Amino acid sequence: MPDFNINQLLAKHLTGKLTSEESEALQQWLADPRHKRQYEKLMNATDATKYLQTMEVVDDREAWKNFRRSYFVHRPYKYYILTAAAVATILFIVVFSMKIFNPVSPTADVIVPHLSKIEKKMIQQSVHSGRNGAIFIKNHQATVLTPQMQKQIASGQPLPESFFQGEAIVKTLHSKEYWLVLEDGTRVHMNYSTTLKYPGHFADDNRTVYLDGEAYFEVNHESGRPFYVITDNGTIKEYGTTFNINTNAGEGITQVALVDGSISIKMKDSSERQMSRGQLATLDSKKGSLTINTVDISPYISWNTGQFIFDGCTMDKLMQVIGNWYDKDVEFDNPQARNILFSGNIDRYKDLQTTLSAIEFVTNCSITLTKTTIRIR
Image (cartoon, rainbow, N blue to C red; front, side, top):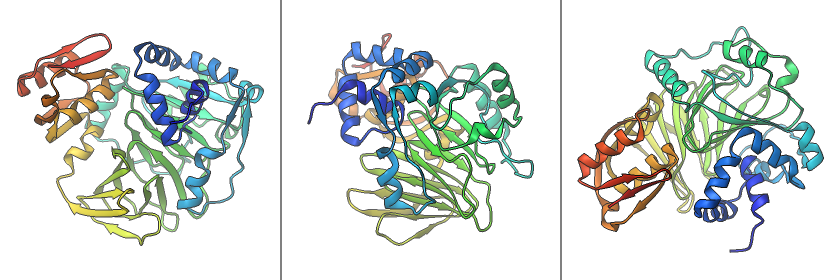
């Protein structure tokens, strides 16, 4: 593996532009506890902004150029190279927690999907537990999010038109989730470690966003203007629907669970295939395959209503999810414990020790928790 400049890696990570090779190099660097602590401090909004302002160059062209060209023909987009001086004046990053963020205020005639009682309760739990937060990056203009603007956003009042010019990136980190409403009224719930890129205003003939990670979409259907979600492994096209996309289902694997309505899936160089309600699509870029099966989709969408549902899940996979959500390293002193199968429901908003005690009881494993690590014996 070639040598990488860690400063460039961190800057590209913050702007959502890491290649798979660079991401692997960053994970190796983060394996050192000292580096992990430095990284966690950097994730503070003020520190992140100061860090990016010291970088000599941040190239914002390559992160999405091949992605867009390969999968979807979109209206022309002007790319920018951000120098250190430019970053200091035009890069806007803020980490914040609020009930729902409208990054592009819906117009008066747009119908926003109704929130169920469960969703409302979950949002309250997320906010109160400090889980609801993201990094918001806009690279077309200097913007200061004043307290008054925060109040406007939280109350759903429209902000000045200039605030929404150009494309933006919303990025959740480990242990965070985020709700947002797009210009057309589509609601998106982003799980942890997820990046969503969207335009300030959608085109006249399509609505296109770019996803890396996991998100639950409630799309506001518009006849003649389909909604596309582009991922590394393929494109999802909606026909007025609710669905979940997870690009982290495995190496090179994306899974799409259709909750309601109708969508189609298209991998690169393949024909479009329709999905029906209650089906799960698995896109495997290594095999070049797309499979669609009717399944119980509850385990794939339960996170959206505040639960983890595991059915015959290995302890290894279970602890990956728990470790990411609670932002802890996981270590197995007993390698055989990785293969123990676990089935059950876990409340995402319970404190970690309570969750681990429940897992310990069911699996008969000995689990200890330190400030940074979950250890399984």
